[in-house]
Length: 111
Length: 247
Image 1: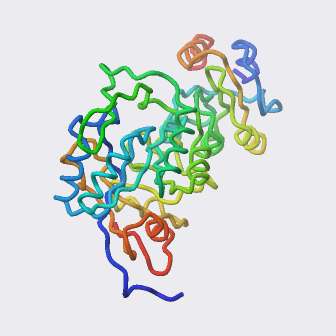
Image 2 (image 1 turned 135 degrees about the horizontal axis):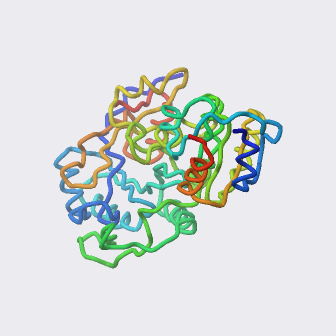
Image 3 (image 1 turned 90 degrees about the horizontal axis):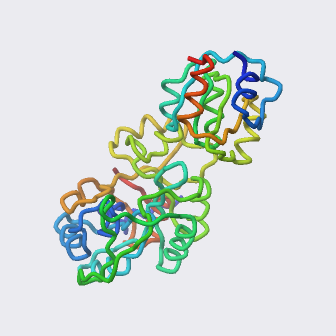
């Protein structure tokens, strides 16, 4: 499944990486401790988190994640958006909470 | 650079002590009890760092002065990433400006039954009142905003217990953000410094993060400097003219 499919199904707002929405999502990782994301997320995963600090981009980039969904309608900082554009990481916002975003992704086959 | 080692001394400092104002601290953490234990442990300097508040500092300072201990006022601020950053300040005016900034970014009301009492006391251990803010909560400020505010009020910014699992900048943010202007890092295990210091020159302190009387001075740092003042501590952390923090 592509990020574009996920954006459409969950009604996400795309903040950066519009040109990369065809990338394939291989699975998901949900969590807010960046140390755990570094340890346990896998290449191609879509990451669901409430963190908006710019370090999330470095983590996504280093782990080659397919994108980041920020939950609860939180707005990433300007610095985060700037780095996401530079690093070409798709950054999206959902108004739902982690539990629901994760559940819906699982439901549409991201496992 | 001229070394001034001749007139330098080692001061034993525990810069991270909570009082009964922190909901998670023991109610025995009153000014008299803290100072008694600090004296027993041979501490020259103590840092008072309650969660998101400094309301017990005036009492702590009076109590410390009577016993010849230097008390430094601080706040352990919770950033919105749930990272703990200690701000230490040279005078009450800066300290309370910082407290105001923290309060205006901290929402919610304390639930005493679940989180604990937040007792404001005087130097005689008498209860003046109870703080009703959600001191255990997180502010709306990013780590960068917290550090910048501490510096705006002439404080020293130290990331708390970075080698622990909870409320640590390394745990929560994966690594120390590029360009974050921390003055020092607090670690629990002195050997952890070799892990962090790859290619970077951070200054490290160790302190107790005491929430219980028995924990005061359990860990400390030695400041090699001229006298026990805030400005000397700042110089020590900046390694000015041979001053240094020994852990």
